[in-house]
Image 1: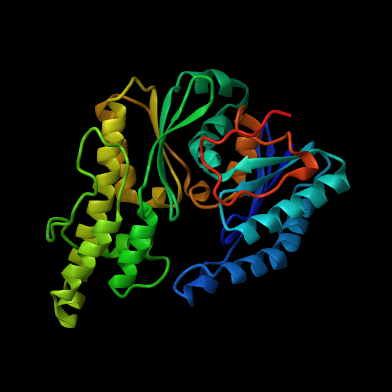
Image 2 (image 1 turned 45 degrees about the horizontal axis):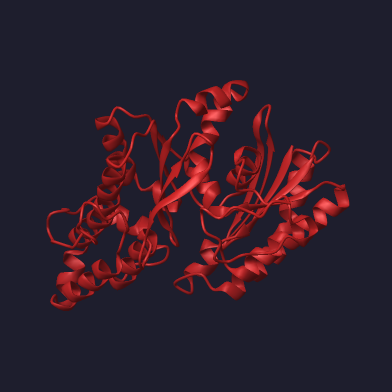
Length: 349
């Protein structure tokens, strides 16, 4: 089994994965309530919370599932907040040393790319390789608070970056938009909730980079446009029209994501489409991307809600199935890389 730890930002997470059975257990401590009071993640507080909660989570995992069969400890070593990553890597090394097993570094973004396949493996572990091969090459859209990426997961199981954002990530744009509208943190879910009562066509917001041959994303101009729109309204008008503002703003973000995914699908032949990352919980986005995949008669794989945010389940899964991106060569010298790229591959041992 693989024992995995995740602490790249504000979630402390532990998971156990058995290739013959799938995920044996997952344990998570979320810090949302703490950071909500500050309007966003405070790195020092996040680091402190990881120190406080890794011990109890690991004790729960040991008591509920046992560590007797663990043959490797996997841990997120980037990208993320440096101090938060360091806590996870230190804990992983201590566990690996105590159990006399190897330690491996997992790329958090690559784990997101792999996360839609966790459920596929769980359905029939023994048949996973054959079913996976039928879904490759795979177009992966990773959308979170800090990253917006389009990647190709190839037949060789290597990951190649197609595009990323030139400024704000989609989740960041939703959170910043929510703040401008007087909503709390995290903003994305609150924007989605209010958007249900609004009209997406009420306000005309820009869709980022409009060229069809350009796959990169851009959301900073959209945020600025929202600020100018709000400044033209009275406070009472903003309150009254907040559902329309949320619906129109959200639609601009999601439409930009789907447009670029559509353009990427036109660049080559794909066997499936995937969606992952925290923003993948948005039901409107799931529907839009699922519809796009349906138009192309391609299977659509969306990460399960428990595997969209920062979680150790996807770290354990990626440690097992990512043939090219897991750092096993560094061993006890494993360090953290806060700016680790999705297509970065570790040096050979």
